Image (cartoon, rainbow, N blue to C red; front, top):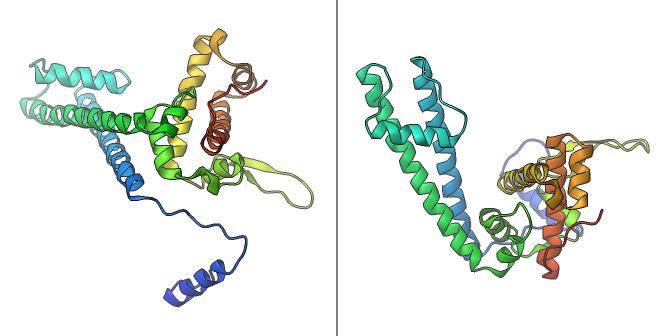
Length: 257
């Protein structure tokens, strides 16, 4: 698109793109895919709201010298104790506001659990999602989101194309015959990328705890790279494996050493 965005320039850019033989187009999602993704979007919103509410509870307690341990579980346990009448030493007004926040926090917890069960039910009914859940680090939420978002994986020529679409491939700044690869581009679906990285982080943590149960490729990459870099590389590898599983209808196989 040329500079100076307006309707005429946008229309010209669309016409120019359509005439290019190498231009790639996004597949139209079905109504069923959009319906399943609506559950994901609603759950993701509730998770962000719960995080905000947890931070609010922590900050209010800290104002009066009370410190909660790290983690949602600690806030959940405190909220239940508070509603049962176990109030910290602080003014009555502040305790009242804290009670309202604890009530809202526990309500968000219940809503998130309900959304998660709905997603799990839909994942178990889909053959591709069930296949993806056999991969270590891929649960029903990630599998359901991938199937609903990607649709037909054959729209990507290779597994690397899918990884690049998710923003998991290195940024290429090569020039003058010199190869320069930077950080991952992050130019893609942020939701799926986040789910993959979180899933591979869980897989890496389990590999460190039980090294005898991990495959050789995962053990090698965790040993040779910084932890966060290793989990991102594992997410990249997982995206390529997901493409193969969806296009070829194959079961998951451990990566070769």
